[in-house]
Image (cartoon, rainbow, N blue to C red; front, side):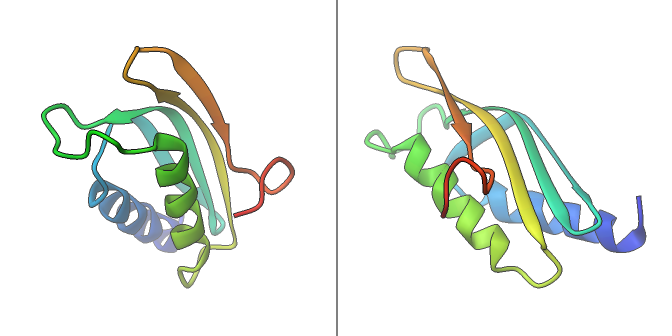
Length: 99
């Protein structure tokens, strides 16, 4: 991994961690300017964001990341955990959904 990709990975992790999400099961890495997000995302336990829409939140994250200098694209293959512990698939790649 290049120095630039390592720095971008740290920056992406820092930006995502500012959101009210549990990303403990999320893998984040950047390769040649392409962000790869894989794993599971859930609402933070004990958070005051009870009405948080995880799908909408991931859409916001993908849009924010695509605006960052040095980021060419975002490949997002994330499973969203709901309040009922059911999984929903979020695929934020360009081929499936535009943000």
